[in-house]
Length: 317
Image 1 (cartoon, rainbow, N blue to C red):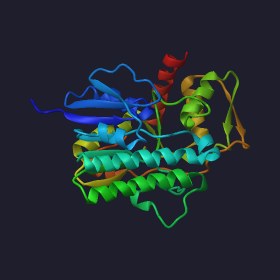
Image 2: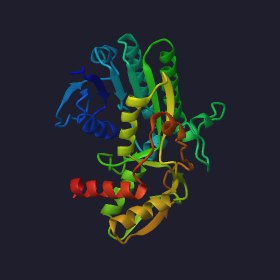
Image 3: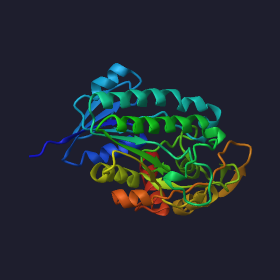
Image 4: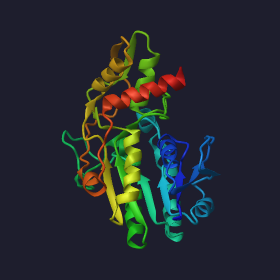
């Protein structure tokens, strides 16, 4: 019998982490070790839970010993409201925990490190953007300046360690992720999670921040989890940044209308232009992931919304 690969999943109680944990524990070739901090761990077969403060260097070094793969899904996250009102919340903790994890990965000779970056470093564009379309000489969108540069710093550190070690690094620039176990709190959730909560709790109308014209690339969580699986199996390069999205852009207005239609509710949309929004237009070109990993998104936006609404009804009603 082959030895199981030991996978350390950081942030396993979060949205992305929980979905990854539920899928990877079904793979008999993996031995999963999951970290948690403030949120309580959940029942999960074939998983060992460890409480760890990833902002503490000794704690990080301890949990990364005798590990083959690290999937770094731990992060301080929020929606547009917090990004605009308290942009510093995305900077300090994320920079510290990833710096310690990367150094410990080097010291403990981890074989593969997977980091969830994002798309905040990309400028607004009406055409799908490739990984190479990021221009470091251009100023980041003001509301994304802190979080964007933090993500870029961590990507650069992954590249740095890839040059002085045998560790393989994967940086996933994913678009807006949605699905089961997302945050559906109106003050903390991302756009789609908050919109589903608004629609499902509304009786006659829903208020949308801004004018609804900005566009987003969205990806269902199962497609992102599948991306992680394929990167473990198929990535050859020692360091790679990959886009991970649907390759399409949808206006906020169109997305809201889809949620209303799929929920079968009769609701009027009212636009509040006094509330904070981030006016960008984005879609991702994911041909590199298709070519090197054999990955393509499989879940359409409509199907993803249907699955998410079904989960919401089962857990919030």
